[in-house]
Amino acid sequence: MGITLRNLICIAGSMTYRAAWSIEFTRSLGRGRHFVLLISVSFHTALVDRYTRSDVKSLQELAVLGESHPPGPRSLFFTTTMLWTIFQRRSRFFGSTRRFLLHRLQITLPLLSFTFILTACCLVLLISLGVGFPYAFPIWRTLFTATIISIPIWGVCMSALHLVWTFGAPIPHFLWTWQRHRQHYVPLAFDANDFMADAEKKHRHRRPPTLWPGFLLVALCGVYLLSTYELPIDHRFKAAVELANRVPRREGYGTGEKIFIAAMFYNNAYVLPYWITEVSKLINYLGPDNVFVSIVESYSSDNSPALLRAFETKLEAMGVPCRILTQDTSIHRPPSMVTGPPRIQFLADTRNLVLEPLATRGGYDRVLFSNDVFVEAESIVELLDTNGGEYDMACGLDFQQWGLYDIWVIRDHAGRIVSGQWPYFFEDRDAMADEPVAVFTCWNGIVSISAEPFLPVALRKGRLSTFPRPLPLTHPAYPQAVNQTPATTPPLRFRPSAPEECFSSESFNLPYDLRRLFAQERIYANPRVITAYKWRFYLWFKYALRHWAVRWFIERVEQRDGNGADLPQFILGGTAPKTVWDGGECHPGGTLRLSAWNEN
Image (tube, rainbow, N blue to C red; front, side, top):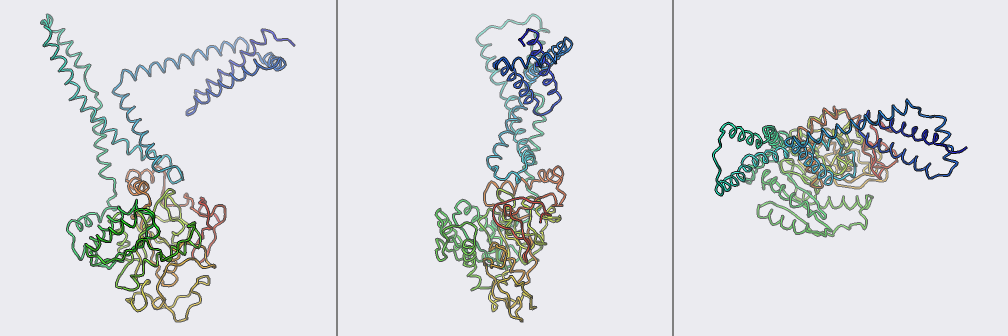
């Protein structure tokens, strides 16, 4: 069969008809309509190109298709009319939009400036926070936070621009007019009315944008947002800490409790200056007569030893008793610090070395043990005051790239693995109210623990129970003497897991033993005490996410009502299932994964 002119007309009409329908269909779409239009046009273009370059047989087949489905005069007329209507609509729309934007610069320029500032804030947040674990940074929450940051910046910039326009723009005009009047003779106007009309017209033409009151209002709102970046409950001890550092005294401003401050560091030169400053403020609040500082630094290759030696000199000048070991090698560090038994054994031995002065000196009420974290002095005071001081162990919350960081250690009150996202705990509204949450175990950045279990029996003050407690079969201290009680149990120490136990961190085994060996079960996690291992995450979780506007967005828009059933558990275990033992749910170990609360 030959190719006739009628075949070609039918082919072209059919393709034009289908292309027109594709274009008109995209008008009803929202996002992505330009992409669909591009795909449709590209498809028809490629189809024509294919058949114009292919062999005669394919073209003949296409001719048969066109002959069997001819568009007809009515379809061709409809297609032509539709294409012309679409073209007119697009031309009128873009033309009117362009004219509106050009003649309304007082609207266009603020919109463009706000878009620029918002884009810059989003880029800064994305670059700073990274995209390692997107679930920790929901896109709409991040955009809302960026908007909250951008609005006051935009309002201040536009208000400043208005001031420059109002008071700065007339100066060059006045100088130019004055110079012109000096050099040239200007005759008197014959028609005073015309002269005044021209002056009024020019005055109206130079009138500054009328939106400046709105810009000023936005700037004032920004000042309000900045001044209320902290919740009142977050800084209730701030004034007392500032007073203690302005007017220091030996007995301090606290409750008079004796606090044993402990810490260990390794390559932490980036966090030590901030940590030393805040701990120095804390010591002035507690009183130099009420504290002892014990720090161990080992195997560091940065400036950490020098910073700690300078801190030791400062403590001696303040009259604070201390023991700071730098460049310590008394405990062998394993070649690989990958999570495993050698690493846990090394960390447990190092932490016990930090606590050695406590066991020999005694006389302290609480142990304040800090990781290498960013934390404020008033937050540490908040930790010491958890539940009005009625606790056996209190922990802060530490944050990193996936939200709540040390999920390997913390368990809720029923021993279940928690979520890395607020409110963290299943069916527990205390976290939403920023109240201490009862937990099974925790550590999470910084902890305050009753010092009694760490002391030898002879140095204890009789605060431990005198009733025997049975031990689980899996505990390494099983079996114990029949008459052994928490009051007569040997001192509490950090330890690795026994073979019969779930493989856990030394920081998990300590609160677990605090429960099982010493009947110390009042363990709380305090959501007001925010810590982090990197400064950018500290700013994000301490200030950005605790801002009242962002909290409103999380609670109302994201609809977090305190029921953690919609939050996934953060399990370290890859595809392996979690198990249950005497210490609650057990992380199988491995990579991080998310699962539902009710997953077995």
